[in-house]
Length: 172
Picture 1 (cartoon, rainbow, N blue to C red):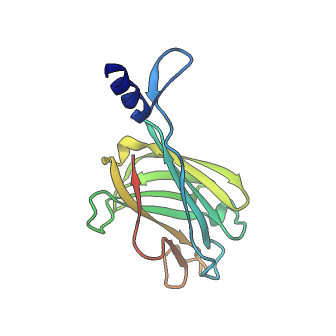
Picture 2 (picture 1 turned 90 degrees about the horizontal axis):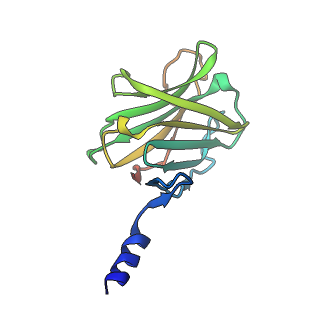
Picture 3 (picture 1 turned 90 degrees about the vertical axis):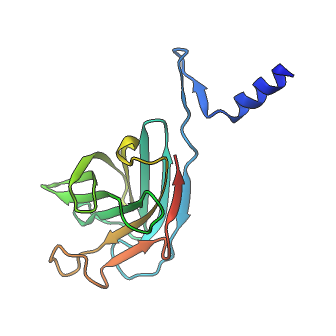
C-alpha cells in the first residue's frame, strides 16, 4: 500500500531531477490560443502562448503579418484576483532604439525588467520573474497597439485584443 501511495504522489508531482541530482519544478506545458484575423492593423494578433517554470513566466505573441521591431507595442493586462481590473502589465515596446520589456503596475510604474527575444518576423517572446505577479493564479488579455497616427496613444481603431471577450486563465 505504501508503494502505491508513493507512486501516485510521484506521478502527480511537477518535479523533475536535474543532472546534478537536485529536484526542480518542471516547465509547465505551454498553453496557446488563437485570435481571428479580425482587424486591418500591422499588429493583428494571431497566436498567444503562455508557459512557466518555478521562477519564470514566458509569453509568446504571433501576428498575422510580419512587423518591424519599432512597430512592437504589446501589453499583457493581468488581473490577479478576478475582479476584471488590471493589477499588472507586462509590456514590450520600442524605446531608445531597442525592444524593451517591463512588468509595471496599472500606473506604469516599473516593478521589474522582462527579457524580450525576437523569434521570427511575425513573433516575439517575453520572459520575466513570476514573483513579480504576486499570484499563483491569474487571468490576462493581450493588447496590441498599431499607432497609425504617430501620437503615441492607444486610439480607437488602433488596438487588437485577445481574447476578444474576457480573459485567458493561467495557473502557475
